[in-house]
Amino acid sequence: MAKMLRGVYVVLCTPFTEDDKVDETALRTHVRHLVDEGKIHGIIPNGSTGEFAALSEAERKAIAEIVIDEVAGKAPVVVGTASVSTKDTIMYTQHAQKAGADGAMIVAPYYCHPNDEEIFGHYKSIAENTDIEIVVYNNPSTSGVDMQPELIARLAEFERISYIKESSGDMTRVAEIQRLCGDKMRVFCGCDNLSLEMFMMGAVGWIVPAGNMIPQLCVELYELATIKKDFEKARELYSRLLPLFTLFETTGQYVQLTKAGLQILGRPYGVPRKPLLPPTDEHKQQLKEILAALAM
Image 1 (tube, rainbow, N blue to C red):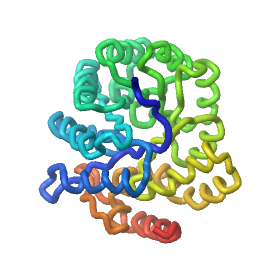
Image 2: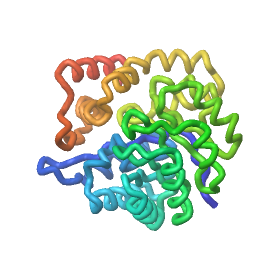
Image 3: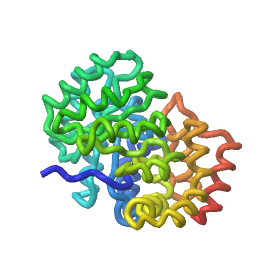
Image 4: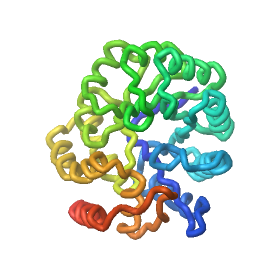
């Protein structure tokens, strides 16, 4: 039986060595920290924050296998398996399934601007050729297409398509998806600076880049809002976390800031793969001050 996916899922950064190879040792150490100390509910390798588009096929497959091996069943692993072509997306999803992943997160094909019928056919082919939970990822700012709730409702008719990471920034989407899909589609928050609002609207989880740096605080916010229903304490914590979330959302530098933040916290994780560069000194200083205020 498939695991129910819910809670705080950290979308992993990918560490690189000085000679630009995947740093397996750093990756395993980081995964152990997130699972054993951070107490996160799930992990997502090969997402946008993991620089999946800059990784080779061999690197993507190796990272998925390393993470699944290191997690060792302690938490669900949802592998990012997106590609521009349906054929390659199916290939990556089948590999994730064979490696033991609990799900696959798949953003709509990027760059090519597919229409609704093309997007529907893309996910339909994946669902028909794999047997793994699929998290649809709606991120208009990076994919170039915005999957509307009506399209999501069509996708929800497939048994294995039961989750969506909603990153459009439109708060009306949560309620509209719930209205159209009922319990056939569960929403994960994909906008950090709307996380509390989305929890209060019924989001079952949160896929969060900042969780690489502050996993315990992300878990605490989620549990205050969704399990304990202590909204006063949740609002207090959210207010403390918002400067970090706002920095991430307004700059869009999830990869750069996360790696810089881990360096600040004494957990060096390498630099982004070019063409990305480390953040500016100004942004680094902002990040340092924010993390200090969070007593990290």
